[in-house]
Image 1 (cartoon, rainbow, N blue to C red):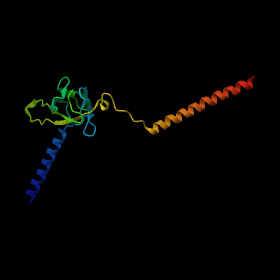
Image 2: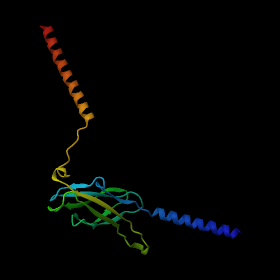
Image 3: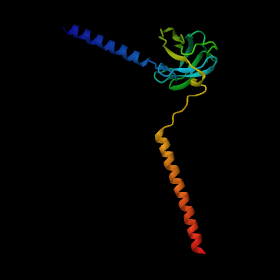
Image 4: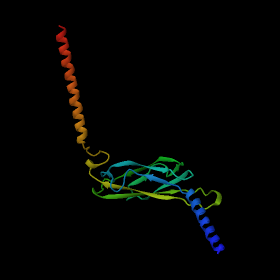
Length: 193
């Protein structure tokens, strides 16, 4: 009976140690993108732009070397600008990955293309130990729109009515103060004569 309890305790202890060792090797590298399904990149036929993604390495215990690759380029719309390997030090964020997106002149307005990028941690291979390299993906939806709706020309801005009201009140108060000072100066000049 004591042997069975001892074996169970020993197995639980070993299982706990394995979990602790695994947690210490977890890394939280990731990529931030300014575009997603509900907020696609909007470009007109014939336009091109550069999209900047941001790599980060906020959790873990090591610097990382990450390789970026366009895994699905939606018909040749995109290319990585510069090197495809990025050094991402521990605790860093905002390491830029620049992607050039070019829309053909004959693109059909209303079409949506998805650019898929994959990011793979490059294993150092040092020490002969098994090293699990992390991988993650990012998708950039690209919507083909008319030139009036394009990101490059900007969308018509909406005027906030509350902001407009505040500006109007400030203008009225400023005008009243100026009129009051002018009248006060006129009265003081007429009294001094």
